[in-house]
Length: 545
Image (tube, rainbow, N blue to C red; front, side):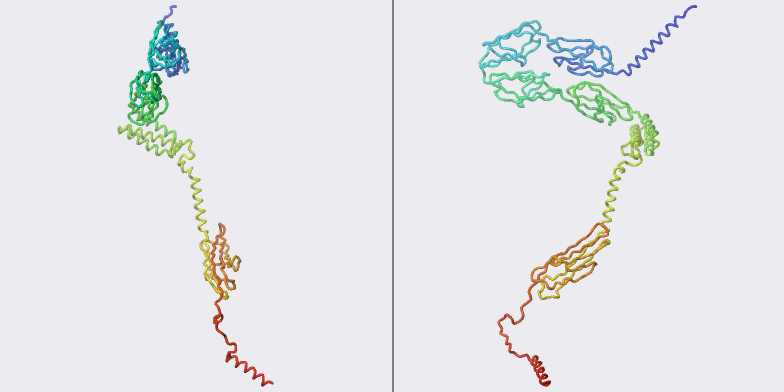
């Protein structure tokens, strides 16, 4: 029986296609990896797969596809280093390299006179005359100082495998000093006491000795500020390492009002301007009813801008609104349904933006029918604004307090006491008296007593409203205190009281007429009436005898 060759080939092709499809599907959901790159010293330029990323060690590179990659590190004065490595899905790959310096040949330093201190790149490196080995290739700042002589500074370029020498004869100390300025990165503006003097790297001669304020500026970097002391015949060095500054990034969308995510973090709504670090950034914008848009870009020292024209998806927004209403049918979605009908009408009329806004309002209303920002499923009372529930105890408290105040006012009793008292009276005036009028107005009461006291001792009591008289006679000469205290036991809320206190003066009686005036009274004077009376008595008596 002859075999059909296609019967073996077709299944193999199908297997290959299935395997390819599986790999493709797996790639669609593949998680990216991360690379952590560090070096000693740091600051090496990073090239990934021969692409200059604009990054320097030490740093982290995110969103790298899994697989085999090639990295190269370059740093002036050090040998270029490269390596092939693999990035695993969803994992961090750590890369570290200790950079190998490229050194030159012997570097000799001779001075006249000798014994000078040698500083290379700011570090003490010995005393002249001497030979320095293994000096890295590249530019180096050389400073020679010797007591009693002017400092000397220069820059030398060391080449690999080449021997070099520096010979210097010191001169006399001048009356001024010198300042050398350097910055990382270079080409930064230098200001000395506020005056622009040049750009780094530079040397400023003829500086009058003293202390100066130095400001170094470069676009895209934070200002560097320091002080420098200048002495006659000395060279002062200023080396500034600048820090990259945050720069503005603007995001504009049409239409506006989209949520803006920068590197995955919500930063605000468009139009938006925010400060970000320099480097690569991913900007994503999202707005209900529109398609999600995303851009990647490098933001340099001058800042950056991103603009998006959003694509309307009004039908999808209307479907989402209908779905939200259907999910909340158990609640009163009348308002949401009216908004949905309005959205449909706007869309049919060609107003897609209005339709999207109405659909968004319908969704919000369907999910929170009472509009208290609490979803229906989490709401204590979905059909009653929660603010009313939260305020109910306070409203009840206020109502109770109002009722209590009203009850107190209704049952409030006001005692009234009026005292009519002479200010002075005679000691012999036994009929002198005071008038007390006592009453209580307002609500009902259970008891009534008015106590009258003279000089602290109770002299009378009244147990019902009315007008009463209190005798004042029989008091000794002097000032006396009269107190009327009215106490009314209210039907509720205790006792109301009113006290009236007054004083009166008791004076001596007036002198008898004629007495004490110097007039002599005749005791023998006869009073006709009385004599006749006595005569009649005598006569009567004689007749009887």
